[in-house]
Structures are given as structure tokens and as C-alpha cells.
Length: 334
Image (cartoon, rainbow, N blue to C red; front, side, top):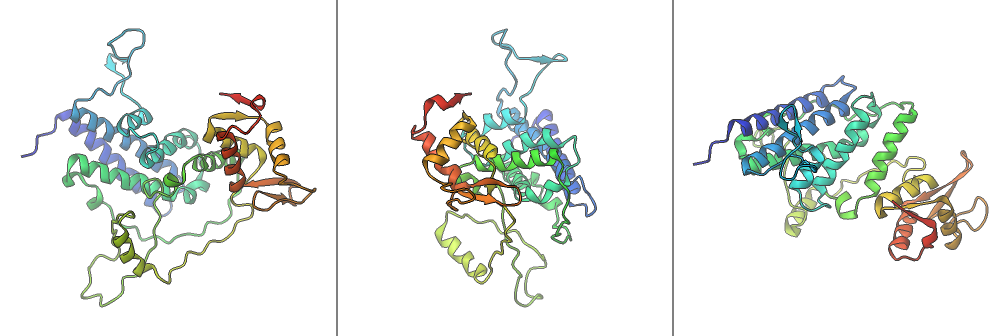
């Protein structure tokens, strides 16, 4: 017989589930423009409440300590101040490189950048991360509180088209948020960025055969373990002939020098200056002549009359820093 949950745990759990359902409702409304903004804010509330419910159930303290009074906690209106989302997630997911923690970290940072702004332009850019945030929540709540608290039964696949958005003019604020998303992604290890726990990716594959004999459900989510070689081999049979089509966007995956330095700072925790970057492209001769580059690392952008750099160049510089081949005098420690 399962132990009955305390009122506080039950209330936190209910708040978490209600927040999730509201977030999905906002995201799936066909004419909603504040789609990602509403979803992110409510999912952050949901995750915070779920983690607090888990801590409460386990009897773990999840409050900020008062540094001036040993053994006490920070008080707000007479009550202990509970840990925020990122601190709660870091307490629960011990591995700092856990893809679920990285997924939560992205939205924790993103929430403050978009909750007071209208930015529909980013909706299609973070759809994979949004889906992972939801699926990770479902998996954790079932694992900790049982299938009776699953939210899947309350959700349905919406009857929506995958829309091709018209070109939306970008503001300076849009560009800052988009740069943040790209920089965050580029700071991740390959294992994390490719993980379905960080960003969920899927094909929709038609269910073939006699409809009368098949399941009544039009679309089914099939969970699988990508590390199970035999299982993956089975699924490969279903995706033979399905080829992902990538439309190349101009300058996609290319960075201005200032963006390169931002990414390096994120990935190496070292703040570099522009003179160092100039020294490095000269050292590796990636720009041997004017308007001429080694395309693996660099490209001349004719319309803007400047140079942009590739992921391969960023990775080369990261290796250079990690191997301490750079000039220490050109590094400013954080």
C-alpha cells in the first residue's frame, strides 16, 4: 500500500500538473501568438513545483540558507525562502552536464528574457527543447509519484499544420535573444546537444495497413532507448526511405568575431579579447588574402563586407585554449 502524500506535497503536485496543462493549452491554441512565452513561464512554475514536491516527500530541505545566521534559513514574510528553479534542479540533478538539467537551464535563462516581451519569432526555433521540457516532466512525475499522476491522459495531439511562418522583421531585442539561444546551444557538449532529453526530435510516419484492424489512435508516441542497438535496428526499418530535407539558410551556423568570443567564453570560462582572435586567424592562415578564406573555418560575406566564422573554427579555438597554446597575456580571467 502506497504511503499517503501530505497535504503540502499534494498541493505542490496539483500546482505542477495544473501549470503544465495550462502551458500546453496556451502552446496549442491555433491563433495564439504568445506561444513560447506563455509555455515557458508556466512550465518553469510547473518544474519548480514538481521538484519542491519531491523534496517535500523525501524530507529534504529546499530553502536558502541564511549566511549571516548559521543553521537558519532566509525568511520572507515569516516563511523559509524556497529554492528557485535552477537551484532546485541543480540540487536534484547532481550531474552538471545532465541534458535534462541543461534543458531546464536554457528555459530558466530564457524566461527572464521573453516573459515581458512579445517574441513569436522564436517559437519555431525552440520547439524541440519545449517538447523535451514537457516529456522530461512527464517521465519524472510518473517515476516519483506513479502513473496516477501522469498528464498524458489529459493531453491530445492538436489538429494543427506545421506552419511555414512568413518572414518576421527582427528587432534588436529579437537578435539578442536569438544570439543567446545559439550561444547556449554551442556551449553544450555533443552528447548533450544530441540528446532527446535536451531537444526532442521526431519524424511523423504514416501508420500503414488495414485501419479497422489497427489501433483507433491516429498518432501514437512510441518510447524507445537509443542506446539499445537491437531496438534501434528495428526502428530503422520504419524510417528507411525517409530523408530529412534541410533548406540551407544564408550564413546559417556562421558567426561574427564578437559572437565567436561570446561562445568561447561560455565554453571555456575564459574572456578573450579581439586582438587574440586576430592573432589566431593569422596564426592558422584562415584568411590568406583579402576576401579569400579557408572555407572550413571562414567565409567572406559580400553583402555585409565582413568575415564570418564556422563551428569548426570555434572548436579549433576551444581546443587551442584547452591545450594552453594561446598567449596568456591576451586572456582576461572572469
